[in-house]
Image 1 (tube, rainbow, N blue to C red):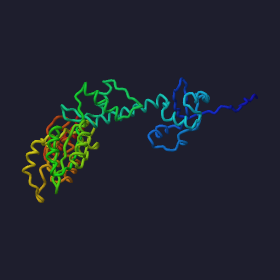
Image 2 (tube, rainbow, N blue to C red; image 1 turned 45 degrees about the horizontal axis):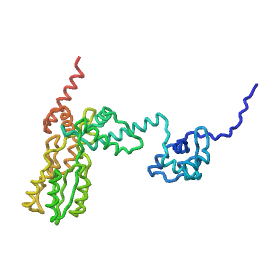
Image 3 (cartoon, rainbow, N blue to C red; image 1 turned 45 degrees about the vertical axis):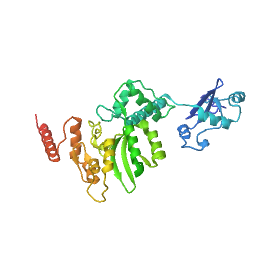
Length: 358
Protein backbone atom coordinates (compact mmCIF):
# COMPACT_ATOMS: atom_id res chain seq x y z
CA UNK A 1 0.00 0.00 0.00
CA UNK A 2 1.49 3.28 -1.10
CA UNK A 3 1.54 6.27 1.19
CA UNK A 4 1.81 9.89 0.20
CA UNK A 5 4.61 11.70 1.92
CA UNK A 6 3.41 15.10 3.13
CA UNK A 7 6.26 17.51 3.68
CA UNK A 8 6.00 20.90 5.37
CA UNK A 9 6.36 23.97 3.23
CA UNK A 10 8.39 27.08 3.97
CA UNK A 11 5.59 29.44 3.03
CA UNK A 12 3.47 31.23 5.64
CA UNK A 13 -0.12 30.83 4.50
CA UNK A 14 -2.31 33.78 5.51
CA UNK A 15 -5.98 32.80 5.58
CA UNK A 16 -8.99 34.80 6.75
CA UNK A 17 -7.09 38.02 6.07
CA UNK A 18 -8.19 41.54 5.23
CA UNK A 19 -5.66 43.00 2.78
CA UNK A 20 -4.92 46.73 2.59
CA UNK A 21 -3.18 47.74 -0.64
CA UNK A 22 -1.29 50.90 -1.59
CA UNK A 23 0.28 51.67 -4.95
CA UNK A 24 3.23 54.03 -4.84
CA UNK A 25 6.13 54.74 -7.22
CA UNK A 26 4.84 52.06 -9.60
CA UNK A 27 4.98 49.30 -6.97
CA UNK A 28 2.25 47.54 -5.02
CA UNK A 29 2.55 47.25 -1.25
CA UNK A 30 0.18 45.22 0.91
CA UNK A 31 -0.28 44.50 4.61
CA UNK A 32 -2.22 41.67 6.28
CA UNK A 33 -4.91 42.76 8.78
CA UNK A 34 -7.53 41.01 10.84
CA UNK A 35 -11.04 41.03 9.31
CA UNK A 36 -13.48 43.76 10.39
CA UNK A 37 -10.80 45.81 12.18
CA UNK A 38 -9.51 48.21 9.51
CA UNK A 39 -12.65 50.35 9.41
CA UNK A 40 -12.86 50.33 13.20
CA UNK A 41 -9.27 51.59 13.42
CA UNK A 42 -9.87 54.31 10.82
CA UNK A 43 -12.98 55.52 12.65
CA UNK A 44 -11.09 55.65 15.97
CA UNK A 45 -12.94 52.80 17.67
CA UNK A 46 -9.91 50.50 17.75
CA UNK A 47 -6.75 52.04 19.23
CA UNK A 48 -4.39 49.06 19.52
CA UNK A 49 -2.44 48.58 16.28
CA UNK A 50 -1.54 44.99 17.19
CA UNK A 51 -5.26 44.16 17.20
CA UNK A 52 -5.45 45.33 13.58
CA UNK A 53 -2.21 44.08 11.96
CA UNK A 54 -1.54 40.36 11.77
CA UNK A 55 2.16 41.12 11.36
CA UNK A 56 4.30 44.24 11.01
CA UNK A 57 5.48 43.09 7.58
CA UNK A 58 5.05 44.73 4.19
CA UNK A 59 4.29 42.41 1.27
CA UNK A 60 4.17 42.88 -2.44
CA UNK A 61 1.61 40.06 -2.59
CA UNK A 62 -0.03 38.84 0.60
CA UNK A 63 -1.87 35.89 -0.96
CA UNK A 64 1.42 34.43 -2.25
CA UNK A 65 3.48 35.50 0.75
CA UNK A 66 5.91 37.58 -1.33
CA UNK A 67 7.71 40.19 0.79
CA UNK A 68 8.42 43.69 -0.50
CA UNK A 69 12.03 44.48 -1.33
CA UNK A 70 13.92 46.90 0.90
CA UNK A 71 15.07 49.08 -1.99
CA UNK A 72 11.45 49.47 -3.15
CA UNK A 73 10.40 50.49 0.37
CA UNK A 74 13.16 53.11 0.60
CA UNK A 75 12.34 54.48 -2.87
CA UNK A 76 8.60 54.74 -2.13
CA UNK A 77 8.50 55.70 1.57
CA UNK A 78 12.02 57.04 2.23
CA UNK A 79 12.60 54.46 4.97
CA UNK A 80 12.70 50.72 5.48
CA UNK A 81 11.04 50.86 8.92
CA UNK A 82 8.22 48.40 8.34
CA UNK A 83 6.14 49.52 11.32
CA UNK A 84 5.98 53.12 10.04
CA UNK A 85 5.27 51.90 6.50
CA UNK A 86 2.48 49.63 7.76
CA UNK A 87 0.91 52.59 9.55
CA UNK A 88 0.99 54.71 6.38
CA UNK A 89 -0.50 51.93 4.27
CA UNK A 90 -3.20 51.41 6.89
CA UNK A 91 -4.12 55.12 6.73
CA UNK A 92 -3.96 55.68 2.96
CA UNK A 93 -4.36 52.22 1.46
CA UNK A 94 -7.42 50.66 -0.13
CA UNK A 95 -9.15 47.84 1.74
CA UNK A 96 -9.57 44.78 -0.45
CA UNK A 97 -12.89 42.99 0.09
CA UNK A 98 -14.66 40.13 -1.64
CA UNK A 99 -17.41 40.75 -4.19
CA UNK A 100 -20.34 39.81 -1.96
CA UNK A 101 -18.91 41.73 0.97
CA UNK A 102 -18.41 44.84 -1.18
CA UNK A 103 -21.95 44.52 -2.48
CA UNK A 104 -23.28 44.29 1.07
CA UNK A 105 -21.29 47.36 2.19
CA UNK A 106 -22.49 49.44 -0.77
CA UNK A 107 -26.09 48.31 -0.26
CA UNK A 108 -26.04 49.30 3.41
CA UNK A 109 -24.48 52.67 2.62
CA UNK A 110 -27.05 53.27 -0.13
CA UNK A 111 -29.79 52.63 2.44
CA UNK A 112 -28.12 54.97 4.95
CA UNK A 113 -27.92 57.75 2.35
CA UNK A 114 -31.58 57.28 1.42
CA UNK A 115 -32.55 57.45 5.10
CA UNK A 116 -30.70 60.73 5.58
CA UNK A 117 -32.33 62.17 2.45
CA UNK A 118 -35.77 61.07 3.69
CA UNK A 119 -35.24 62.74 7.07
CA UNK A 120 -34.05 66.02 5.56
CA UNK A 121 -36.58 66.50 2.74
CA UNK A 122 -40.28 66.67 1.95
CA UNK A 123 -42.59 67.19 -1.03
CA UNK A 124 -43.54 70.91 -1.24
CA UNK A 125 -46.62 70.11 -3.34
CA UNK A 126 -48.23 67.78 -0.78
CA UNK A 127 -46.40 69.04 2.34
CA UNK A 128 -45.60 65.41 3.19
CA UNK A 129 -42.26 63.66 3.66
CA UNK A 130 -41.20 61.07 1.13
CA UNK A 131 -41.04 57.42 2.17
CA UNK A 132 -37.75 55.53 2.16
CA UNK A 133 -38.85 53.39 -0.81
CA UNK A 134 -39.75 56.49 -2.84
CA UNK A 135 -36.36 58.07 -2.11
CA UNK A 136 -34.51 54.91 -3.15
CA UNK A 137 -36.50 54.76 -6.39
CA UNK A 138 -35.71 58.41 -7.18
CA UNK A 139 -32.03 57.84 -6.44
CA UNK A 140 -31.96 54.95 -8.90
CA UNK A 141 -33.73 57.05 -11.54
CA UNK A 142 -30.94 59.65 -11.43
CA UNK A 143 -28.40 56.77 -11.58
CA UNK A 144 -26.77 57.56 -8.24
CA UNK A 145 -23.67 55.49 -7.43
CA UNK A 146 -22.34 55.15 -3.88
CA UNK A 147 -18.79 56.31 -3.20
CA UNK A 148 -17.40 54.04 -0.44
CA UNK A 149 -14.63 56.54 0.34
CA UNK A 150 -17.05 59.41 1.11
CA UNK A 151 -19.31 59.85 4.12
CA UNK A 152 -23.03 59.08 3.87
CA UNK A 153 -24.05 62.54 5.06
CA UNK A 154 -21.94 64.33 2.45
CA UNK A 155 -23.33 62.13 -0.33
CA UNK A 156 -26.89 62.64 0.97
CA UNK A 157 -26.54 66.42 0.63
CA UNK A 158 -25.23 65.97 -2.91
CA UNK A 159 -28.16 63.67 -3.73
CA UNK A 160 -30.64 66.28 -2.47
CA UNK A 161 -29.16 68.92 -4.79
CA UNK A 162 -29.34 66.52 -7.73
CA UNK A 163 -32.91 65.42 -6.95
CA UNK A 164 -34.06 69.05 -6.78
CA UNK A 165 -33.16 69.42 -10.47
CA UNK A 166 -35.61 66.69 -11.54
CA UNK A 167 -38.28 66.22 -8.86
CA UNK A 168 -40.39 68.34 -6.46
CA UNK A 169 -38.29 67.96 -3.34
CA UNK A 170 -37.24 70.52 -0.75
CA UNK A 171 -35.04 70.62 2.36
CA UNK A 172 -36.89 70.46 5.65
CA UNK A 173 -36.65 73.69 7.64
CA UNK A 174 -34.74 73.68 10.90
CA UNK A 175 -36.79 74.25 14.02
CA UNK A 176 -34.78 76.54 16.29
CA UNK A 177 -35.33 78.11 19.69
CA UNK A 178 -33.64 81.43 20.49
CA UNK A 179 -33.79 83.20 23.84
CA UNK A 180 -32.92 86.90 23.50
CA UNK A 181 -32.82 89.81 25.99
CA UNK A 182 -35.72 92.27 25.79
CA UNK A 183 -33.58 95.05 24.36
CA UNK A 184 -32.45 92.81 21.48
CA UNK A 185 -35.87 91.38 20.59
CA UNK A 186 -36.68 94.00 17.96
CA UNK A 187 -33.34 93.43 16.22
CA UNK A 188 -33.90 89.66 16.24
CA UNK A 189 -37.42 89.97 14.83
CA UNK A 190 -36.25 92.24 12.03
CA UNK A 191 -33.58 89.72 11.13
CA UNK A 192 -36.08 86.84 11.17
CA UNK A 193 -38.31 88.87 8.88
CA UNK A 194 -35.40 89.34 6.47
CA UNK A 195 -34.73 85.59 6.55
CA UNK A 196 -38.45 84.86 5.93
CA UNK A 197 -38.56 82.66 9.02
CA UNK A 198 -41.85 81.19 10.29
CA UNK A 199 -42.67 81.73 13.94
CA UNK A 200 -44.01 78.65 15.74
CA UNK A 201 -44.39 79.94 19.30
CA UNK A 202 -43.15 82.56 21.71
CA UNK A 203 -42.76 82.62 25.46
CA UNK A 204 -41.84 85.61 27.61
CA UNK A 205 -40.03 85.35 30.94
CA UNK A 206 -38.56 87.88 33.37
CA UNK A 207 -36.02 89.65 31.14
CA UNK A 208 -36.04 87.77 27.86
CA UNK A 209 -38.24 86.36 25.10
CA UNK A 210 -37.93 82.79 23.83
CA UNK A 211 -38.94 82.32 20.19
CA UNK A 212 -39.34 79.02 18.34
CA UNK A 213 -39.18 79.39 14.56
CA UNK A 214 -38.45 77.47 11.37
CA UNK A 215 -35.55 78.49 9.13
CA UNK A 216 -34.01 77.34 5.87
CA UNK A 217 -30.98 75.08 6.53
CA UNK A 218 -28.77 77.23 4.30
CA UNK A 219 -29.14 80.11 6.80
CA UNK A 220 -28.13 78.06 9.84
CA UNK A 221 -24.56 79.35 10.20
CA UNK A 222 -25.56 82.98 9.60
CA UNK A 223 -28.34 82.71 12.17
CA UNK A 224 -26.11 81.02 14.75
CA UNK A 225 -23.39 83.65 14.39
CA UNK A 226 -25.92 86.49 14.57
CA UNK A 227 -27.55 85.18 17.76
CA UNK A 228 -24.29 84.41 19.53
CA UNK A 229 -22.32 87.52 18.49
CA UNK A 230 -24.90 90.29 17.98
CA UNK A 231 -27.93 89.35 20.09
CA UNK A 232 -25.91 87.55 22.81
CA UNK A 233 -28.71 85.06 23.35
CA UNK A 234 -29.12 81.30 23.64
CA UNK A 235 -29.36 79.21 20.45
CA UNK A 236 -30.81 75.69 20.32
CA UNK A 237 -31.78 73.41 17.40
CA UNK A 238 -34.97 71.53 18.28
CA UNK A 239 -35.51 69.44 15.13
CA UNK A 240 -33.92 68.79 11.75
CA UNK A 241 -36.97 67.21 10.05
CA UNK A 242 -40.72 67.48 9.68
CA UNK A 243 -41.62 64.65 12.01
CA UNK A 244 -43.72 65.55 15.03
CA UNK A 245 -44.02 63.31 18.09
CA UNK A 246 -47.19 61.26 17.93
CA UNK A 247 -47.97 61.31 14.21
CA UNK A 248 -44.91 59.41 13.00
CA UNK A 249 -44.40 56.49 15.37
CA UNK A 250 -43.66 53.34 13.38
CA UNK A 251 -46.03 51.12 15.32
CA UNK A 252 -49.00 53.32 14.39
CA UNK A 253 -48.80 52.37 10.70
CA UNK A 254 -49.66 49.23 8.83
CA UNK A 255 -48.51 48.19 5.38
CA UNK A 256 -50.75 50.77 3.67
CA UNK A 257 -49.86 53.67 5.94
CA UNK A 258 -46.48 54.78 4.73
CA UNK A 259 -47.15 58.50 4.40
CA UNK A 260 -46.58 60.65 7.50
CA UNK A 261 -48.97 63.43 8.42
CA UNK A 262 -48.68 66.77 6.58
CA UNK A 263 -47.12 69.84 8.05
CA UNK A 264 -49.45 71.76 10.39
CA UNK A 265 -50.18 75.02 8.58
CA UNK A 266 -52.27 76.76 11.22
CA UNK A 267 -49.48 76.92 13.80
CA UNK A 268 -47.34 79.37 11.89
CA UNK A 269 -47.53 83.08 12.54
CA UNK A 270 -45.93 85.74 10.34
CA UNK A 271 -43.04 87.64 11.81
CA UNK A 272 -44.63 91.01 11.13
CA UNK A 273 -47.74 90.15 13.16
CA UNK A 274 -45.57 89.05 16.05
CA UNK A 275 -43.62 92.30 15.82
CA UNK A 276 -46.84 94.33 16.11
CA UNK A 277 -48.28 92.19 18.90
CA UNK A 278 -45.07 92.44 20.90
CA UNK A 279 -45.70 96.13 21.58
CA UNK A 280 -49.17 95.39 23.02
CA UNK A 281 -48.21 92.20 24.84
CA UNK A 282 -48.88 91.99 28.57
CA UNK A 283 -47.43 89.16 30.58
CA UNK A 284 -49.82 87.42 32.95
CA UNK A 285 -48.54 85.10 35.66
CA UNK A 286 -51.85 83.24 35.99
CA UNK A 287 -54.39 81.98 33.53
CA UNK A 288 -55.41 79.05 31.36
CA UNK A 289 -53.35 77.47 28.59
CA UNK A 290 -52.19 79.81 25.85
CA UNK A 291 -53.27 79.59 22.22
CA UNK A 292 -49.87 78.21 21.25
CA UNK A 293 -50.15 75.43 23.82
CA UNK A 294 -53.64 74.51 22.58
CA UNK A 295 -52.33 74.30 19.03
CA UNK A 296 -49.43 72.14 20.14
CA UNK A 297 -51.95 69.73 21.75
CA UNK A 298 -54.12 69.54 18.65
CA UNK A 299 -54.25 66.39 16.49
CA UNK A 300 -54.52 67.50 12.87
CA UNK A 301 -55.43 63.99 11.77
CA UNK A 302 -58.58 63.80 13.94
CA UNK A 303 -59.16 67.58 14.13
CA UNK A 304 -59.36 67.42 17.92
CA UNK A 305 -57.71 69.46 20.71
CA UNK A 306 -56.66 68.27 24.16
CA UNK A 307 -56.17 70.06 27.45
CA UNK A 308 -52.72 68.71 28.31
CA UNK A 309 -49.88 66.79 26.64
CA UNK A 310 -50.73 63.60 28.56
CA UNK A 311 -54.15 63.30 26.91
CA UNK A 312 -52.58 64.28 23.61
CA UNK A 313 -50.09 61.41 23.79
CA UNK A 314 -52.74 58.91 24.91
CA UNK A 315 -54.91 59.92 21.97
CA UNK A 316 -52.26 58.80 19.46
CA UNK A 317 -52.42 55.29 20.91
CA UNK A 318 -56.23 55.08 20.59
CA UNK A 319 -58.21 53.21 17.95
CA UNK A 320 -59.88 56.51 17.03
CA UNK A 321 -56.58 58.02 15.85
CA UNK A 322 -55.46 54.82 14.08
CA UNK A 323 -58.77 54.57 12.22
CA UNK A 324 -58.54 58.19 11.05
CA UNK A 325 -54.96 57.57 9.89
CA UNK A 326 -56.27 54.78 7.64
CA UNK A 327 -58.96 57.11 6.29
CA UNK A 328 -56.37 59.79 5.58
CA UNK A 329 -54.36 57.43 3.35
CA UNK A 330 -57.57 56.89 1.33
CA UNK A 331 -58.15 60.68 1.10
CA UNK A 332 -61.22 60.49 3.35
CA UNK A 333 -62.20 63.14 5.93
CA UNK A 334 -61.70 62.40 9.65
CA UNK A 335 -64.52 61.12 11.86
CA UNK A 336 -65.47 62.10 15.37
CA UNK A 337 -64.90 59.56 18.14
CA UNK A 338 -68.56 58.41 18.15
CA UNK A 339 -68.77 58.11 14.35
CA UNK A 340 -65.42 56.33 14.33
CA UNK A 341 -66.64 53.64 16.74
CA UNK A 342 -69.80 53.17 14.67
CA UNK A 343 -67.77 52.89 11.47
CA UNK A 344 -65.46 50.30 13.04
CA UNK A 345 -68.44 48.24 14.28
CA UNK A 346 -69.96 48.37 10.79
CA UNK A 347 -66.69 47.15 9.30
CA UNK A 348 -66.57 44.24 11.76
CA UNK A 349 -70.14 43.29 10.84
CA UNK A 350 -69.30 43.25 7.12
CA UNK A 351 -66.28 41.04 7.72
CA UNK A 352 -68.44 38.61 9.71
CA UNK A 353 -70.99 38.43 6.83
CA UNK A 354 -68.19 37.64 4.38
CA UNK A 355 -67.19 34.65 6.49
CA UNK A 356 -70.67 33.16 6.21
CA UNK A 357 -71.35 34.07 2.57
CA UNK A 358 -71.33 31.36 -0.09
